[in-house]
Amino acid sequence: MRESTKALFAKHGWRVDRAVHNYIYFAFYYPYVKFVYHLFRFLAKYFFWFKPLRYVIETAFSRYHAKVMSFQDTKKVFELNEDITAISEKNRKIIPFKYAHKILLKEPDYIAVMDCPCKKTLNAPEWSINSCISVGKTTSQFWIDRCGKKYNARKITQEEALEIIRKFRKEGYITQAFFKVATGGTMGLICNCHVDSCVSLKATQFARRFDGTLSMAAESGYSIRHDDAGCKRCGTCAGICQFEAITVDGEGWSYDRDACMGCELCVEHCPEGAISLYRDPEKTVPLDLDIVGAEYAEG
Image (cartoon, rainbow, N blue to C red; front, side):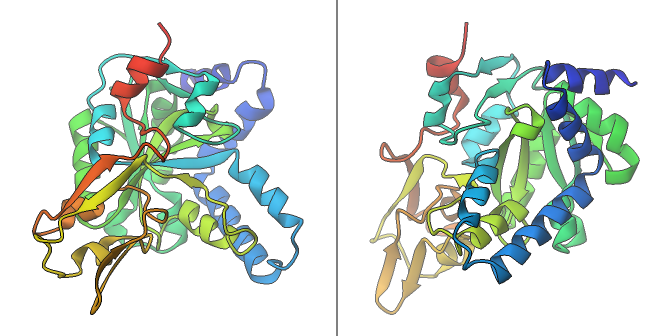
């Protein structure tokens, strides 16, 4: 058994069942995610009327979900040079789910990237496939050892990881950090997601046929402000928004704060600089490592 496999099992302690799940999840990443996608799609298409399925889906969503991140918060992850351990129940203020909300970053400068199973499943453009990023040695080394040839996994530097993030955000992809019971309930995976090619975002769309409140993703903790005087109503912000939170039409510019996930893309793409991001106290706490380190981390 490879050392990276031993480390993966050790992360789960006595929960060997979860360690096996973790192994299968990554070793067979593409078929695993492909199966889940088509299962959710099938249920949403043919069984949306069967209300008890809502509870099954809610259980799944509490174990597999994401946190939308702004660019600056993402940047702090890829500039981190020390371990962070924040595993208390307080984390639910950041990741508001019942399970899988630990922020545990060990050897954060040990990073790997490999093919995204969501993009492969949904036939995304070839250039976008190699885009799933692992932060921390345990998972990164497992990817390199077990998925190197199959899913093009390779080790990269922190700056290379940031360049990948920048490239995708320029093309209109949001940044999400994933938390899964299957991977130890901890943060460590960051991906570049688009509603057209992300199984997580698609699953939320499917689930809302059962219950309009279900979501696999938590918003970033930010909202936006709009400078009406500086806005030229070009519609760039509405076009880049994946959550239909902005509308630009003959009646002017309008914003749905509840629909907004605070991804920051509209801020980055506005040619007039007429939109700004702010921390919204009525939303979840941002996954900002400065906040985590000061208020949530141990030691």
